[in-house]
Length: 311
Image (cartoon, rainbow, N blue to C red; front, side, top):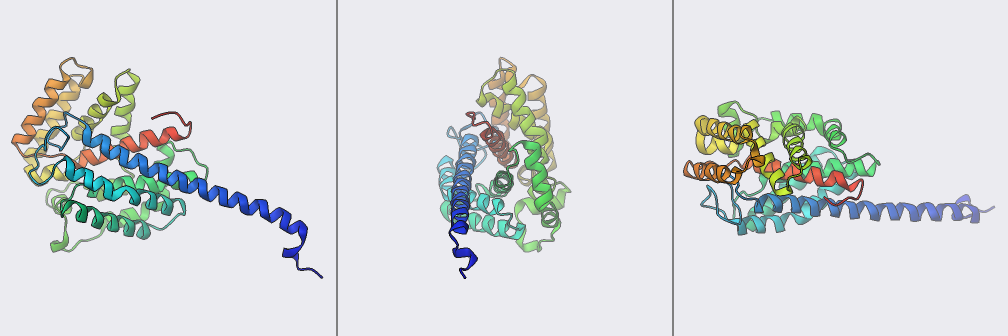
């Protein structure tokens, strides 16, 4: 008697199933590579944006003496494979500690590429988690829409993110952001992640969409979204450099820019440049807002992959 798995009828049905699985695996890997390209593209879109108060761009170094646009480009190059790897891990439903290991390795590569300069630590975390969540959605044929992606983040990894946010860090091992978060009782990148990145989904994305809906350019939408973030978040990068007074200045000037119409105002560029010069004079750099802007750009552009429309 023939074994069942060698029967011609069994082979005829299993072969197409095996081929379908292989095709699906190739499609998933291609999607993860697409997400990785979008992530790097989003970080590059943040880098080239100008005027961008206090931040490094292709025009100048902002408030930074230790980094240039070239530093950021080296960092971007070092991260190109990380986003594909964390997306694939997310697609497979990997636990948070696996995603965290990938992020730590990416941070180590970034620091080697930049000579020890922290260019993208916050972005590694934020965009990495978004890539993982979007790939998880794609693998289960869920829409790549902001509400679905955010719910996936919280359902799939929310408990671990909350523990990560509340984890006690030895005083000597704290980053600048973690130390500032404790000293000033403000939320940092970890708390933002634990809450499902509210600054991305509730502040930056709506502002991006609002500006675009009004018929203005993608460049204008990014400027408005950056100022919206600076007006709403407690940026530990700003607290580290300027303390509570510096943080208040950033919030007030950013809110005033938006209240005057943002990029809808005829003189918006002059006002943004004045804000840039003021931040540089005070050595203020809203790097946390820059990371979250890149995350919002990634989410906005990736959500359009469902319809295959150009971002």
